[in-house]
Length: 116
Length: 449
Image (cartoon, rainbow over all chains, first blue to last red; front, top):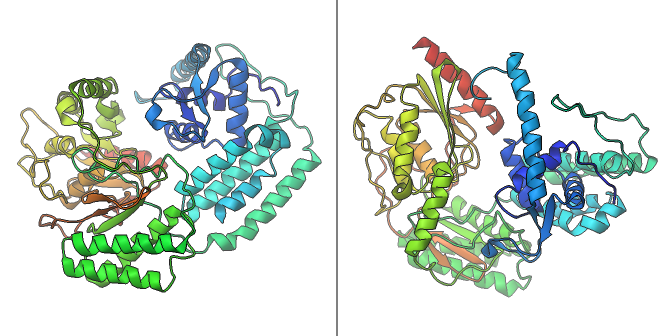
């Protein structure tokens, strides 16, 4: 398996971590959640999705779990993933970095309005 | 057929990838193929796979790729290397292109309607727990023709015995049995396709019998998971409290409430939460946009919920008690809004409602009534077309059906409902363009005021 480096966190890996913030999810759910949270702009294909997941697993940012916390939603055919504490910290660091970028963009008047 | 083709595409992915995640990737494609039907969505899926295949072949699975450049505290720029692509990758790309173009003839063939999600009466009506076309891949139905015949016979019997107009129920049942006798269901070996085809036949026959478009008749549902045999157990006080706490933590599904430039209010509401828990939150949300000059209500990701919260929000948009049509007889939702609301300033403000093909059920109730009353401009896509106004009956472990057993209330509006047809927007744009389109309209109106 190729090693994907996670410093800085690539966009796909960051979106995957964000998707796992609330629930344990399987691959298709992660893809749907990413699509939703990017307002339909990002649909991760299987290659990108699973190579990112593998990199996140290697880095200890996510863990594969046998069943999700809500057992009613389990499907034995699936592999479920959960964000670890290290993953949460990495996502927070990346979000803070992006917030800094936004601050710069606002200061330079590249972005306007309260809604961004 | 389409899924098999997509699964074939996966064979072009690097062997390492297939060994590690091949099964999951096939499942993911199957899930997408199950939910993304129609020409455009199928082409989009193929394009996504092709791009992903190239990205994986050329970028993601070569060891030793250098790190992306990073400067702390500054924007990041992705550096794309200029290495010559591997010859295997080029060959894979060529083969993929040939396969995609060759498959276009298949894509142009008419597809069955997608299976309707089973959420009848969500919130206040009879639900279908476990029937989830969203979460599970469709599975092959029993190939035994006898199983098909038994299923059609059971659906026909339900229509005959339970549909509100017995004569029409009989005609619908006869039509389905005739289709079955002619062998028209035999080739449908995917359960969800079979359900979709039966629903299409019910709709076609009902049009021929003079039932207006948009009226709910019956809806056959397939669930990959076994359907429960009885109603769900009543919620305990502890469960209710947990549910309430969870809703409040999610701000009662109000994702965003803000004021945009030119004093345009914007609220994104991803479901209509139970008013017993969320009435106050809804009041506060409406109060926070009370002084705007125009309001955008974003229901693009709203799958429905409780009609009483939809009615509560609609109450702010009228200056007198206003009738909203609810297709359910004996609905627990009051028929009229509680307008006028003291201190409310929204009654004469322009309202724009954003919709998508995911907008359904109680959200469609809200959209439909505001459109019929000409109180809002609907911007976006045609809604999903799920009234969820019938009673649900389990037929087999995996099939059930909703049936209109009681006559719906009289409908004073010219379009008689939104079942299957959905609600057409006034400004038709894609879901991703809807916000900008509505914002421009709202800003223009707000400036005039």
